[in-house]
Image (cartoon, rainbow, N blue to C red; front, side, top):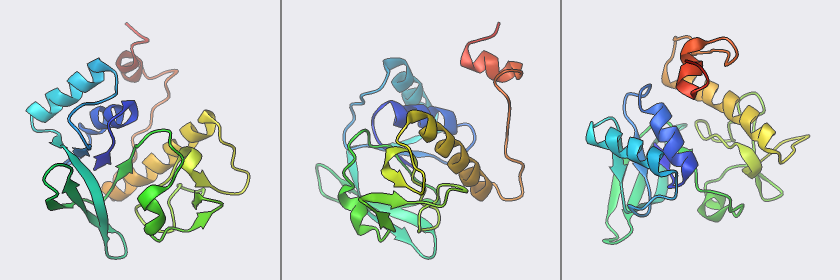
Amino acid sequence: MIFGGGDSALDWTVELADITKSLKLVHRRDAFRGVPNTEAQMRELVETGQVDLKTPFVIEKLIFDQKITGVSIKNFETKEIEDLDCNEILFLFGLNKKLGPIVDWNLELSDKKISVDTENYQTSSKGIFAVGDINDYPGKLDLILCGFHETTLAVQEAYRRSHPGEKVPFAYTTSNTKLQRKLGVSD
């Protein structure tokens, strides 16, 4: 399940649609702030049933028992609550560093940031990951390069958890022609 409405939320939705059993994108409105082409790709995935688009909704609460099992979302207009099952969540809300309702999730905090295990960038709650400027650990640098590294390790762990016993797909961009074609850097 992905929460957000900008480029990151749209990009992750498009990329994960082919490798997940089910995928929901939740946003507070039906308008998105991402690249129009990526939004069009997302809407095509919604049309084909690969993605379930939930608008206009906001997160109400997390549902968990030792690990995440679902979320309650609230319709922004009708105020009705809907419970959804899920086992992984990506929160892609943008550049605002304020924790907002996350502060009530009982995550371990350090100086108004979320503490993580640097092996996989999981928070103190199993199944909840934090990457980028929102997290904190010894030696943390708020650089986009660090965010890329953190995201790579978090996604690897999320894949292992979502596909137990399967090998995590891995390819070098410098030598994998299929990946190069997908990135548009090869014939």
